[in-house]
Amino acid sequence: MSVTELVEKNNIIFGPINSRRFGVSLGIDLSPSSKQCNFDCLYCELAPSATVNVQKEVVSVETIINELKKHLHDKIDVITLTANGEPTLYPYLDELIDAINKIKGSTQTLILTNSATLVDEKVYNSLLKLDQVKLSLDAVSPAVFKKIDRPHATIHIKDIVQKVQAFSKEYKGKLFIEILFVHGLNDTKEEVAKLNDVLRSINASRIDLGTIDRPPAYPVTGISYKELHELSHLFENSLPIHIASRQHAEANQTAYNEEEIINTLDKRPLTQEDIDLLFDETSKERLNKLCSENRITLKKLDNLEFFVPTQNSTRKRKKI
Image (cartoon, rainbow, N blue to C red; front, side):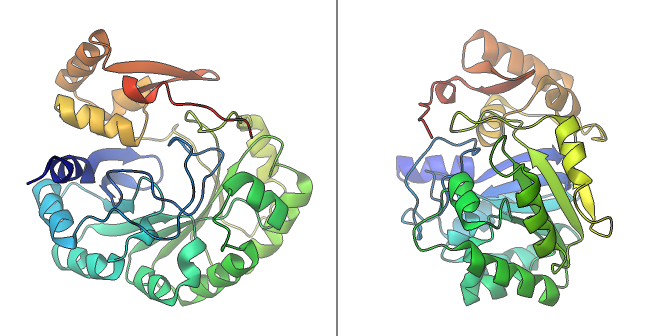
């Protein structure tokens, strides 16, 4: 087995993570070796990179399933398909979902996608097989959409909106819409009004309003909780609006070895609050040791501090 294959195997599965919105989540990274995405969002926690519309570095379905079997147990609420980038670019997504459905038992399946590939009929039909789907929709105005999400040149927001609307009416599982607000871009009354009009025609189980709460790829900032709360009142009362928050997270203290700690923090930077919820006491001691060895460092974003692998804390920032 090559070094690359070993790295991929070690990075495919991460967590479990006590998700604020989806319960105990076991993550599958469908692009473990590099960022492969059709967006280059301003707020992404991964380093900036050129957009792509196909994956060039691909992990086999067999490898993913073998790794999943090692970590899957009955205390996992959801198996979450995600990626260093956009998971629906994975070329064998349909085959992978079929394979997961054969072994998942009562565990739910979830994908976190930016919605753009719903225009692809194969991807559209594949997502219909999942128990839960989270679609991002940060803006519906072409100019604002391009500014925030920085999509591949072939992607147009009008096409995405049409497919999200159609998907929401055909899909039988739980559909979540996520809007992430960036200060000075999509947090205007005008853009919220346009989002509201579109959301009225989408059948969603929940619409999550969030903002930047992890170190972003570009020098942008989020909005305050107060501002987020005020924006929520601009949407129709009939819409299932939810302000994403850590406040109601329940403790799920789990044992992590050093490699799992680094891998988990690489995929999702965590605050001390997250650590207290997720890690058992022995794992907290391992984290402290990694910090003392400078393998893990604290990175401040506004009033929050996140644990991140030290090698990731020096990534370059570009001007918008």
